Image 1 (spheres, rainbow, N blue to C red):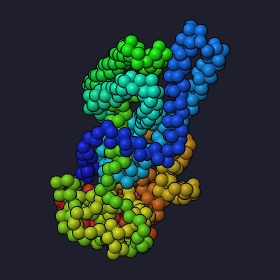
Image 2 (cartoon, rainbow, N blue to C red):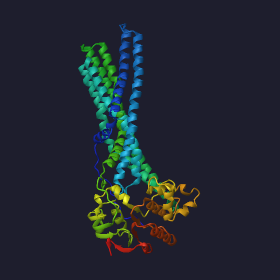
Image 3 (cartoon, rainbow, N blue to C red):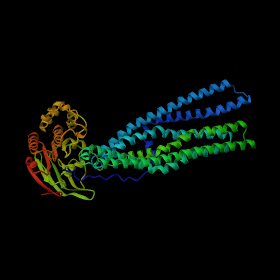
Image 4 (cartoon, helix red, strand yellow):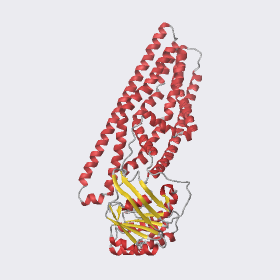
Length: 563
């Protein structure tokens, strides 16, 4: 049986600016702010060592040639010290940056998983799983570039440029203004210009990458059907077309990166020559001496390192910011159903739907619907696919909230019951049991974390699957394969029922529990349910009339109404 209508609407957040994305990502650094400050200090000191290494070499060489005071030995020692310090400081800066990056990636992954848990199931049912996998894996991984190679380089470039402007300004204020202009153009104007041009392409690439992941995931899951119906060539061509489109976007980003690098190098060359000609002119007017002319020129030519690193950031920043926006969109997305905590606990007495209304978007599923489920009874709801049976179970689980009326458990609206208490009171067996790539025992134990092997086996016996498990080579330790593809539909369904028995909740919700079983196994399962339910309350929905033999009372559902 197909699933009930799902809410597959995706978040329609408007694109935020790159500055805003960077600001929000930087906000996540707060727990590691001292380490970030240390990285900035080390990086600034390292760049200054590299710059003044060149300045000192030129200054000393001039004095040696002119035969003035500085001794070659002193110059050599100073140069060696600065070169060694440059290496040590650079290593320290990179160590701090990568420490921050990997710590934050772990923090962000935890935040994303927590956000997905809150959004599930209402916001995630029907959502593109390949894109979600892309966000959790490659998008978060790409943020390493931002945290390790973006935040501190920006601060380092600003601080280093300010120091150099002040240093050059002591020799010539005019030269300082030219140097400031050069730093601003290379470190700010060029990256902003090219970053704006590549922002949309960066987002297009990340979205396209996620879509390709989804297509490949679907293709792998449907490999048997693809082979059976000879669709392999068609899928291969479509995969090749998607890859080519993604490659075209990547090629556009590469061209943009090459253009920026060329423009950056040209501008650096122009400003370096501009400084040289300016200092020659000032030397001729007597505004600076020979030493000042040489030092300012060397300082200008050798100090573009930090802003050049800043300029090259935007080459990868387009994709990084696109990844950041996709991650932030998940973190900021509001769940359709807010979890409840802090309310007074209660035990299960009965359940009731009181004149409820519910619609998926514009499609009305339940209208003015009421039903009472007394304690200890088996209530059956029979109806055709799409009549709203599964939706009712999801509303009782509070996967969604009703739009009219109320769902009551023990006389209290479920919107006022602690979510943890609600989950403890209810066991829900869905139409399609999802199995993890793990052992059968661990898959059953999902119903009760920490359950003993004896408890697991007892639950399996109640679900009439123990004997089958014992015929397997490794018994309960047998791996079920990805998505349980080594088991039949009926076997997976009985594992789902075993989970419900293990969970041992007073209220059991069964959604088509025998849809994948033949008549013989259906009879076995119904017999097990009848004998194993004890004093539990059961709500059983099915389109098969034979399944209703278990129920004490049967209601017919037709387009969201009871008859």
